Amino acid sequence: MTKTLSKEERIRFLEEKAAETRESIVKLTCTAGGGHVGGGLSMTDILVALYYHVLKYDPHNPKWPERDRFILSKGHGCIALCPVLADVGYFPVEKLDTFNQLDSPFGMHPDCNKIPGVEMSTGSLGHGLSISVGVALSARIDNASHRIFCLMGDGEMDEGSIWEAAMSAAHYKLGNLVGIVDRNGLSLDGVTEGIMTLEPLLQKWEAFGWRAQEVDGHNMGALLDIFEKLPPTNDNQPTIIIAKTVKGKGVSFMENTIDWHYGNLDEELRDQALAELRSKKPAGGGHRG
Ligand SMILES: Cc1ncc(C[n+]2csc(CCOP(=O)(O)OP(=O)(O)O)c2C)c(N)n1
Image (cartoon, rainbow, N blue to C red; front, side):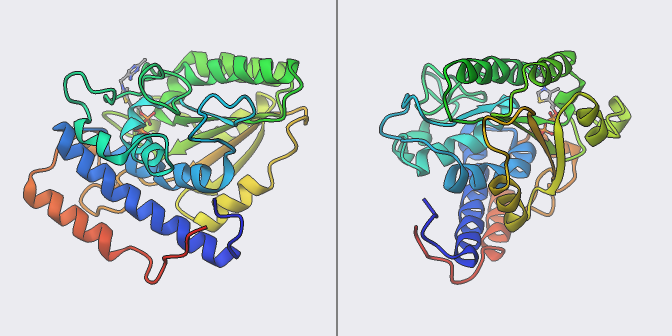
């Protein structure tokens, strides 16, 4: 989607998309009567880099066998995923007007039987990586060249199943698997280190046999660099990217605040949040790849 742009134009385009996505997250939170807004805003730049530059997919053929697979293990990030899937063409954006309403395909967690482009129904934390290992293993057996990306929360690292999956990915030498941790430092009701010490997280993944890297999860240029330098899919080691992020990124009263893990906005707060996000939009973007 952005392949024909210069690097500078691409970053500008993606930053603009991220700003638009954040606005959509705030609006959808109001449509839904509440939502996981903090974790949606922290993962936005990662999601935008993936869907507008990195992933291979065809929104008109969601089951295209050669597509890259994206599995949202932190399923409560559905509020960020849905506007991106709509914008890249999986379904009309107007459909999101029903978000979280009775009989809507769109709920707080993604349902792969109802939303085109969603690879796996998630929401119960700790399962996405195990599923991704299975999908990656099957791609390896089929000699396929697509990648499997799995986005996890850092609070989610407390789930033991993550570490079982981590061991098996290394055991099966799944170089086609890329895990990303949205390292915003907060879980549902506290700081991650207060609930269960995760650090040294990078070294833990390394010890489990993964190629581990850290990146500023809000620096579009750095995110692109790290994705562009992924090893070939037939490599023999899975990759984990620990993306340092800020929960509630972009809305000052939400940033780094546990209260905004899940919340609703009244009209005044919504307008304040949207005005802030609009004021931070990169000026003069507008290039479309
Ligand atoms: C198995 C399971 N236990 C508990 C929950 C409830 N829950 C929803 S979000 C969340 C916090 C997760 O924190 P993190 O992974 O850091 O998410 P983020 O901060 O990125 O939103 C919890 C405990 C759940 N969805 N699944």
